Length: 65
Image (cartoon, rainbow, N blue to C red; front, side, top):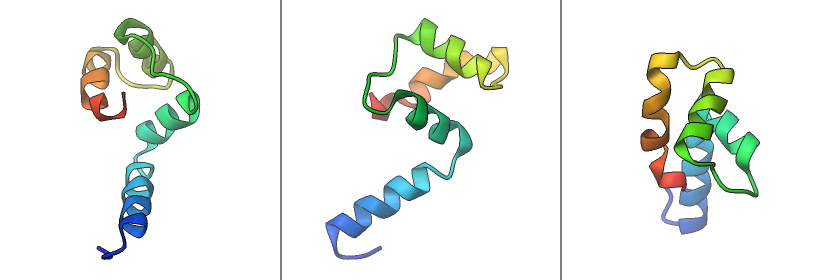
């Protein structure tokens, strides 16, 4: 990593967005707020996440709230 905090932050953002689901979340909610868990689970299910996996979504993305 770079000693430059700006470059380090940029690298972390780029790495985060390489995960397709995380990129979808970012694109769909940028500039807004991630909705309550039930609505979020419904959204990620429409993006192709298996129904039995959707309840894990909000907790795994807790850092972006």
